[in-house]
Amino acid sequence: MFTKQTIKDIDLEGKTVLLRADYNVPISNGIILDDFRISQSLPTVKFLLSKNVKLIICSHLGRPDGVKNDIDSLFPVAKKLQYFLKQPVQFVPDCLSDEVPKIITKMVPGSVLLLENLRFYAEEEQNNEEFARHLASYADIFVQDGFGVVHRAHASTSAVTHFLPSVAGLLLEKEVDTISNVMENPQRPLMAIIGGAKIADKIDILHRFIEIADVVAIGGAMANTFLASQGVKIGKSLYDEKELPIARDVIRKAGSQVKKRDFKFILPFDVVVSKEISNTQPTRIVDLKTHSYAEINNYPKRPPLNSFHILNDDIVLDVGPFSGSFIAGNIQFCKTVIWNGTMGVTEVDSLLGSVGPYSHGTDLIVKAMVGEFGNTPFSVVGGGDTVSYVTSHKLLDCFDLVSTGGGASLELMAGRRLPGVEALLNKNV
Ligand code: ADP
Ligand code: 3PG
Ligand code: MG
Image 1 (cartoon, helix red, strand yellow):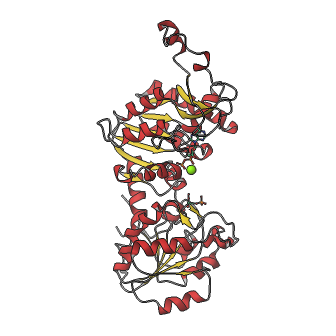
Image 2: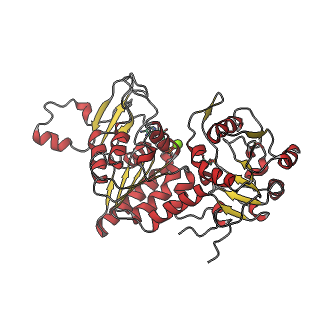
Image 3: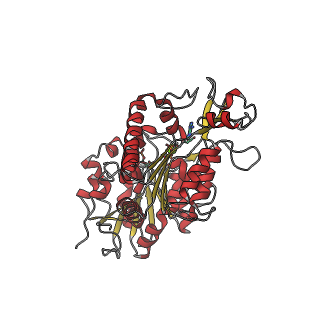
């Protein structure tokens, strides 16, 4: 159960509210490439506006390290919000500007102001009390709804709560509640699928899943590190050399869980390789496991030697079709599936407009998770690139929770405390 007060628990009528959102969205040449985080914040924004508040929204964008620049401006977000809300959204190009209090005085209840990127001030990431006090001086109440950033103790997630009554927004409540429930009380069997490239960020959560899940499957560049740790030659593939001992440790732990209980740890046993990352290069499947089976059965007849080896100039770019199907098959027997990290380099589009050359593994998993093969488990998806894959394939509604958080959802799943949530008022019980 979510133990923090939310915007449903307090009197908001006619108040001035400072809302922290996570509008850290990909923008290129002023165009928002993925508005998922903005659209997901709308229920909270609309709820607040329905209470006739003067709404001041703040957020960070990118990592400008305290230096103002055009690329990380939130101005395109103001335009997008205006489009979604069908009402004007004022924008101030400096979150500490003297203009802000004057604008707020003139604002009518039910109107919206978006402040420029908080990280244009280094004080934001330093969790600076004075910076936070300045932001807090604009409002009567602070609402935290930026789930994607609550794992950071910054001025707008932590220090600001020292100066205002601080409660959660609806998105924060939904995300924390759903993820905590799944981790504490999952419908079993529980499966975790971990892929992607940010290996170091995901090691902690792997340890946790090996203890609590019934099936753990590894894909993406993460799997390359595990394969390399087992002595498999992986050519020019992306992997993390520093993490090799940790990968060995994870495999050892997984092995001891397999002995203790009904637990399955899946590493890819075939992979898709290519000589470079492009949609015009030929791909090849390398079978890492069934060599002896193939020899005994003389199948496939006269296999090319390179079917069983990753060559020095090969790059592993996806899990192979045997492994992808095996993971998809396991999804069929699970009641809950948590997925973070693509199985391959899904950014490369297909020349033919169908599934990209390194997206087949991810595609199989998505199909299995959303019920294409019959079983529809409770499904939780997180991670920037993973969620982009889901949104770009218009599959958002097919999952039970598509998290707006990357690091935040991983830390919550790993059982860490989230400073931005801890700081909020407790429910009166
Ligand atoms: P998320 O953003 O979903 O949290 P990550 O950022 O950890 O996940 O990983 C997604 C990225 O991993 C994508 O950019 C994808 O191209 C990359 N990736 C997946 N598999 C591989 C691979 N075999 N080699 C290189 N990059 C990979
Ligand atoms: C994210 O995109 O994960 C959040 O917005 C947090 O951003 P950060 O990793 O730069 O703190
Ligand atoms: Mg990513």
